[in-house]
Structures are given as C-alpha cells and as structure tokens.
Image: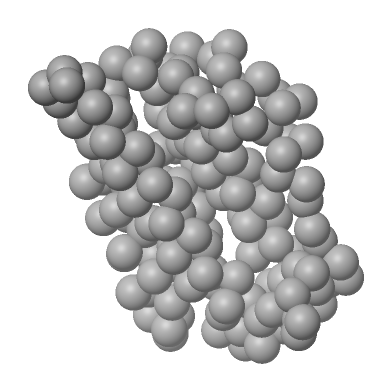
Length: 165
C-alpha cells in the first residue's frame, strides 16, 4: 500500500465488505440465486454478474485515470448482463470470480498515485467524475447491490415460510 494514499479507507472498506459477504453469497442455494423475481428483473446471479462488470469497468477507469483524463466511459449494463448470460454460470464459480475481481480492485485502489486523484472521466453524469470519486463511489455502488441481494434473498425466504392464508 502506498503510505501517501488517501484512499486506503475505501480499499480497506472494500476488502472487509467482500470478506464479510463471500460466505453469505455462497450460502445462497444456486436455485435461489437463479430465481428471477419478475421476467424483466435481474436474478441474484445476474446482480453478481453486474457487480463483476462494475468491478472490471472501474478497474480500467482507475488504472487509466492514473495516466491521464479519459473521455466518455459509459457501459450499457443491461447489454453486458444479457450478453454474458450470467444465468448460465455456475453460482460458486461466479461468486469466486466476483471475490477475486474485488480483491484485486482493493489492491489497485490502495496503490493509486495521489497525484492523479483529480483526473476526470466522463461517466455520463452531469459533471465528469474524479478518480477519487470513481474509487469511493465503487464501494458505495457495490454495497447497494449487496444490500439488494440480501434484501431479495431474505424476502424470498420470508415468503416461502409465510403462513398460507
């Protein structure tokens, strides 16, 4: 870790989050991970696929922003999830890929050159995002999707065991 990196907190938070979450994800039955709540909504498995895409896209942003500002970098998440057919992946292998991508991304965030923190990327927001924002926002974004997964998994369990009326 770079001693002068002000993003060590984000990197530590990411590491802790994925370490705390991996076993919870693996505890979800593959059949439950593949259930789609509605035909037009992602399954838990597809949400993890999207989280992998997000990690990989943000990895590229973070590395490239340390070299120079970058232009427009927006990805069509619906296309990425559909094109990669995450529903057909082995659940445990998908979780391992998610974990490994994020473990490496935490290392990359810890290694960011502080001189590059104000470089920007057009991510389709009203203003270009700084490297600092990209790294910190990634952790918030991942936390949002993990909350979504566990809220969904918990709701499905409650529904399954709810008394019939």
